[in-house]
Image (tube, rainbow, N blue to C red; front, side):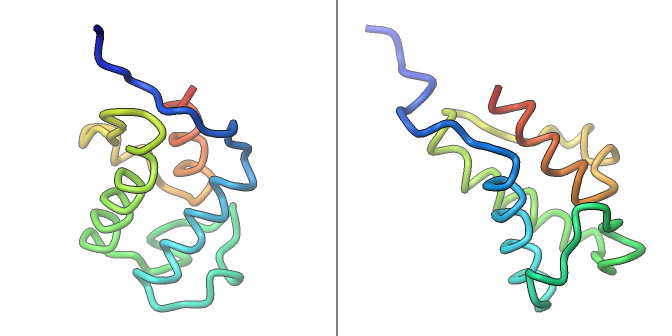
Length: 96
């Protein structure tokens, strides 16, 4: 039998992914997740350094690997993640 690449979950919408990104940034940066806006720059507005961005990537990979086997954010794509919106769009595009 072929390996299952997707587990059965309800479809994700933008708000659900945004909530996860906000919660993760809140924990990593020790800020109120409600203060994180979709248009915020990860570095300029939220003051995330490279370590915080790596923690965000790891948290998102862990969160969504249950939905899609092998879900990962490619290191060469990290430069594209400039805003909270970019992170949400990236996750949604990878989950299909």
